[in-house]
Length: 287
Image (tube, rainbow, N blue to C red; front, side, top):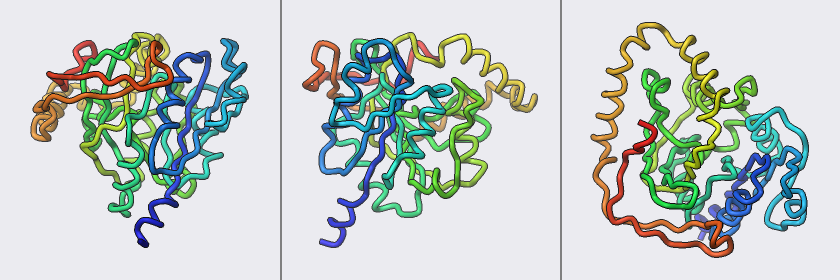
């Protein structure tokens, strides 16, 4: 009985940065709102969108909406984290969704692993219409792999409140597109206890318009390259092979038929279940 009461009081704060993504944001909100058996708040930080978002977002009872100018996505996430009241924090972009039961799975993990401060889980990648592309398992970050193979999608990163409010590890807003990379480096440098879960908690939509494909992201990647020791860059093929071996040993390439349920533009109020008879761990257009 005591454990049940404890679980009920572990609250989530989910932060969504928003700018001109009204259609995607509605799907994202729905996927958070239907999470079962957890207590949560969904904070949406909208940077004064002019695409119709302001017509409905302030009136949506499922979220706490803050409409104010920010200095980019990571500044918006930081603002949401400062406002958060939850014990477990995460951020979910507009074009991402949580899978059914995701937050309960995360809560149960943190309850049984009290020393872990950061949980890395798996994500399913789809195209802009929700069609299956691949599964992306998480791996514990490796300092020599990080620059070449980021080991997790941020839609499936969950942190204890203390990471932000005690350790003070916010996103560096100097980076407009590569903030996740530098934030994980900061977590590693601080020795924050991390763990990996084999559960899949989110869906990431590879729309072809994602921020990390745009010119500024490419510029920031070049800047990060310049910060990487030359000998690490020279051995890039070695790190990539090692990364793939880690994935192989972790069983990432051996998956059974499965399915997932998401909201789509054609079905914005009810999840659609999509069968995946032959899942793959290879993200072919991001090799």
